[in-house]
Length: 125
Image 1 (spheres, helix red, strand yellow):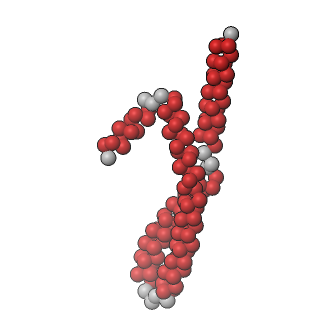
Image 2 (cartoon, helix red, strand yellow):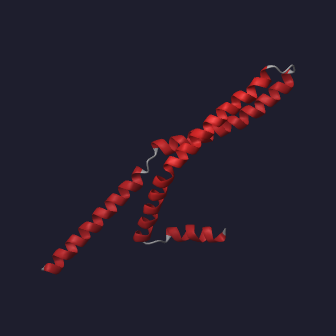
Image 3 (cartoon, one colour):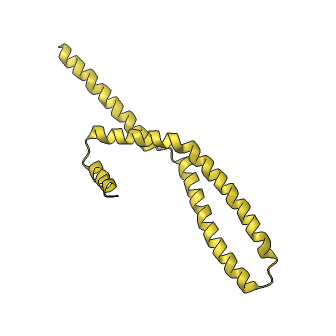
């Protein structure tokens, strides 16, 4: 675990090229795992809904209100938090397409190309 802290600390002292390289890897990782993240959350959300229906069926016929309320409260809290996390992951995956990082990469590439062109013009003179 200490190696991970060193990596994070080194990230703040990184050169621009190293920082841009890290952003490129992050964007590539996001694109690589986006489909699988959506698939996993979709399947898991469907299973969660089916499990919720399966759990609620026996609770509807319980004779005791107190026990039913406690079980329902605990089940609702756990499944509600889980459903909230699934919804958060889906929203972030579907809506946030990492546009700022993509724009940063495009801007960096354009600046690099301009500096190479101006360097070539200066050496031609």
